Length: 98
Image 1 (cartoon, helix red, strand yellow):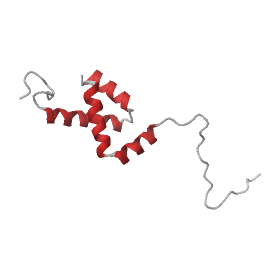
Image 2 (tube, rainbow, N blue to C red):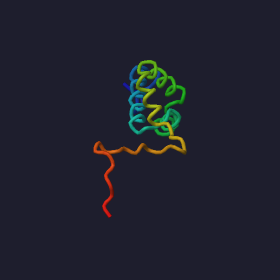
Image 3 (cartoon, rainbow, N blue to C red):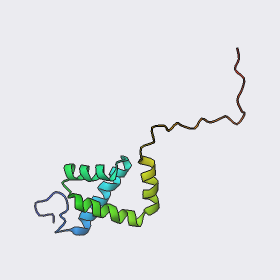
Image 4 (cartoon, rainbow, N blue to C red):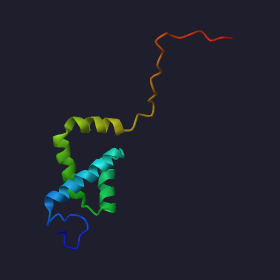
């Protein structure tokens, strides 16, 4: 059982606890949170020690390096001079009617 804990205990059920932390990290990823934001959120809302979150995060990176490279690229802030690419239709530019 969980002994007086509602959530799995790291000492009583380490495998369940780590899976729970992994699940919570995945939820943070769905919310497009950075690693630091995720660590802070789990510490505040789930009372998970930052060292535990960071350790699980690092293991997830080892297992899914390509995903995390794409993820970091997707959530990184754009440079200030960044402008979206303007697409030209496949028919080319049409003259404006006057």
